[in-house]
Length: 151
Image 1 (cartoon, rainbow, N blue to C red):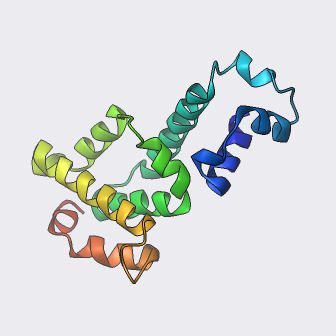
Image 2: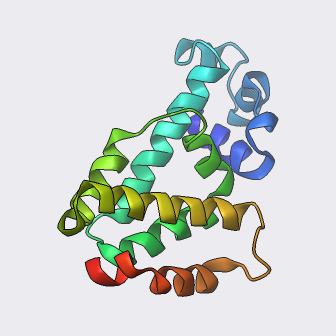
């Protein structure tokens, strides 16, 4: 069910996800998803948590500029899931990951690093730059002083 729901969200956005339709596409009865997810919000929460786990895996072993580029790359590869992950949810695991990756610049530096790459990801997803994509993101990240210091 999660795999099917994720595919729907990635293709059609969160608004395109309906429990009954996801069940149909997964090949199960329309009541089957309710055994695992009491409602659509629970399914969306599980998808968001799965997305965070995937993002953390993509960031594993990376620091500085490499971590920042991997973060933005994940957002660009999974735009709808990325938006869902941060729609009113807090992820202490990501906070800790950035804290560890940017420990040399302290808590404020780590918060600044995460804020900058997260903001860049959203600006790219929302089409705020004439130039787009990973190459542009890489150049922007390279221009950031924190990324160069912590790399």
